[in-house]
Length: 238
Image (cartoon, rainbow, N blue to C red):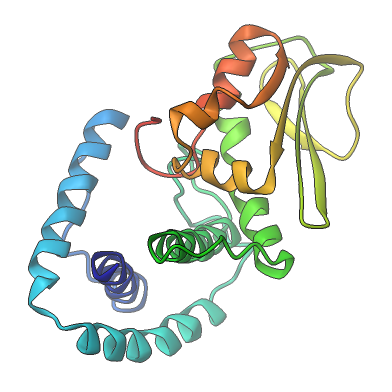
């Protein structure tokens, strides 16, 4: 649990250094593929957590209390609509800042669920946070479906339900790419049905393979396989 807290602290430091102070002490390597980038990031995260072992739990808590308000202030000053952010699991191009903000929220929320699990407590799936977290995580789907071209109007549906929460995401093809649409197109091709618990765990790489075998899906095998491998994190699907 302390390692997770130190990881979150490192994230706050990195956000403040890069976005507030324009200091990029550990820039990502250039011209690497996705697997190489994942390896670099994993090594960087491990390096930080190992160094942070010198910090006591009290120090980590005090530092998170210190960084939290400053991160909030930093985000409050941002323009959510500005196309200046980079979220590698959603696009290779720049995206709106609001998606990067949703990514920051989801990371903290997911690590909270992991800490609760370590304590033997159930996930905290209150709608006021679960809904915006999932609304951010879902943007991994159009990106991962891009290689699978289908005729215009083709529709993929992902439904999520649980704890008085229910939503349906319609991914509709225009022949070249995929978009979220409020209504399904005229060519349904695949479906994936998830509980709220399954949805956040699958998209964040926290759903065991044994549990993945019980997911309910149907339709085009290539599309279904892509949905099941989609992750809204930087990491190799397990």
